[in-house]
Length: 306
Image 1 (tube, rainbow, N blue to C red):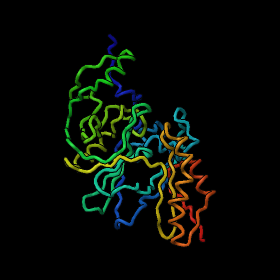
Image 2 (image 1 turned 90 degrees about the vertical axis):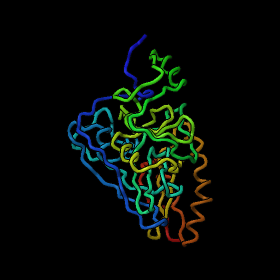
Image 3 (image 1 turned 45 degrees about the vertical axis):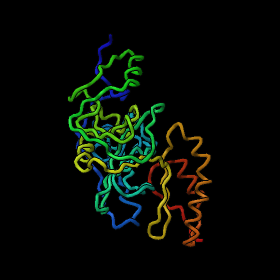
Image 4 (image 1 turned 90 degrees about the horizontal axis):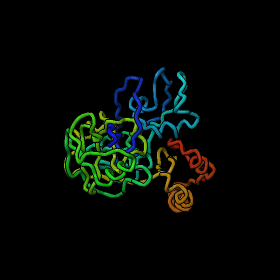
């Protein structure tokens, strides 16, 4: 029997060399008509800083940083490098209540009960072949210091790799659920913390949604049993602001890229063009194509005066 510490369903691990402190991005909302929050910003990479430590400090996920900074080599980060942080967001096309998780962004949105603010944090989701499902559900249960009952599928998968897992893992540093877990109405799926923060902002889980320990604690304290949860998959988002029409593009999930790219212009012509005609605007298709190709996760104006 090979005895190893469980790696959280294939989450790779490295020791963060830079001290971290979690940041939950919190934005006030003026009303249901507000669709864009935040502003992009630039920081300078510090000595000993990793993408994961930067992610935890800035509230921006691992893949989000790479999308916005395609010139970065994660294995060769140079101190002094300017990093663009995509900290402006078009709110997903979903009800502004409870929890909204956009898989294409690897990001969770939590709306306040009065609808006057939204918090957003990066998340890790199911890797290819273990996809996190979409749909509408609720928080079914919430546990602090949970015990992890290892799913049979995970036990079989890890056994093929030579790792024998126990039937259960109790609270503590070896528990991949971390210190907080919120079970969904979707059987077998949980929003939880992690003992391997490298997996947040990436596709590394067996389908559950994992969060940085400090982020999941904040969400855990604000949700109750019955809180609605919408899990959606929107790589392309649009919104009006100040008579301009904005478009935000993310890289579609790997298994959907070819299909999504084939459909995007048909969807744009049906939905985007209709919206612009109402306000005497036309689509700048060159800008749309540029954003789809770059998919840097930052909202850009795609409208011209008609």
